[in-house]
Image 1 (cartoon, rainbow, N blue to C red):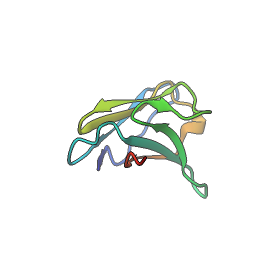
Image 2: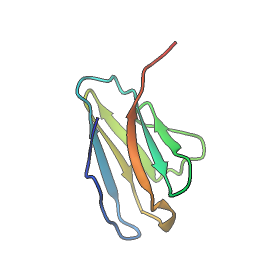
Image 3: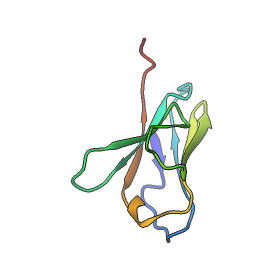
Image 4: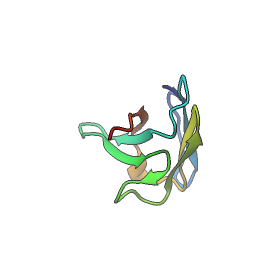
Amino acid sequence: MTQSPPSLSASLGDKVTITCQASQNINKYIAWYQQKPGKAPRQLIHYTSTLVSGTPSRFSGSGSGRDYSFSISNVESEDIASYYCLQYDNLP
């Protein structure tokens, strides 16, 4: 997975978007995580756009095939963190 941009800055209230590109079609099996310093990663979104319980609605995901994006609208101070995408397998 190729994620971009590698880093970004934002002001409160901004909308920010991160993209990930897979090397092949991953059929929407992508999750997005938030990690704050000294804390375990927190899954925010799975299957491209499904919000995990407790994830605020200002977080969203979209995409298909190889190309996916993750957005935060109306950035809040508590959103300061690292974010990353993860491809996963659809296991039975």
